[in-house]
Image (cartoon, rainbow over all chains, first blue to last red):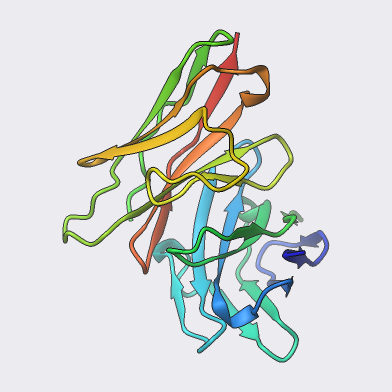
Length: 118
Length: 109
C-alpha cells in the first residue's frame, strides 16, 4: 500500500523552529517529488515548496524562502520540512504530498498539526 | 505566483449540476500549467479528483469532469449527490511552482 506517514503534532513558541518528517512506503521514494502544503484553521491550501528526493533539489514558494528548508533522506525514504522563526500565523496542518506529473499517483500524508503559541 | 480565483461557495439540489470556475491557470510566459482538482472533507487530507485539467483517476465517479479554456479551468459535478458536499480546490503547477485556488464549498441543498 502506498503511504506517507507524518510525524506527530508539535507545539512551539514564537521564534522557534519545527521539523516535520514524512516517511514514504509502497513506492520508489526517488520517483516522485515530495511537496509540502499547509492549511491554516478554516483556510485554504497553501503550497510551500517541493524537494526532488532523487537529487535533493528544492524549489520554494516565494513567501517561505529563507524560512523553510526541505530535505530528503533516501537511506530511510523520509522527507523533512523545517520551518524557522515561527509566528502565530504559522499555526496550521502541514501535509506532505507525493506527486509528479504526468503521473496520476497522488498520495498525501495524514497531516501534522503545528501550533505556535506562547 | 498569484493565487487562483474560485468562488467561495456554490450550491445545488440533488441531481442538479454545478460548475466551479478557476481563473488564473495560464502563465504569462506560456509555460504549460498542469491543472488539478482536489476534494477535501473536513479534517481529511485532500483527494485528487481531476488531473491534467480533464482527466479522472480511476475510482473517481464520472459525474466529476474537468475542462480548461484559456485562463480558466472548470470543475463540473453532474447529478449532484449529498456525498459531494465538501471543499474543492483547483491548483496549477508549472513544473516549478504550484499555486492553489482559495477553495469552493459545495453545498447540497
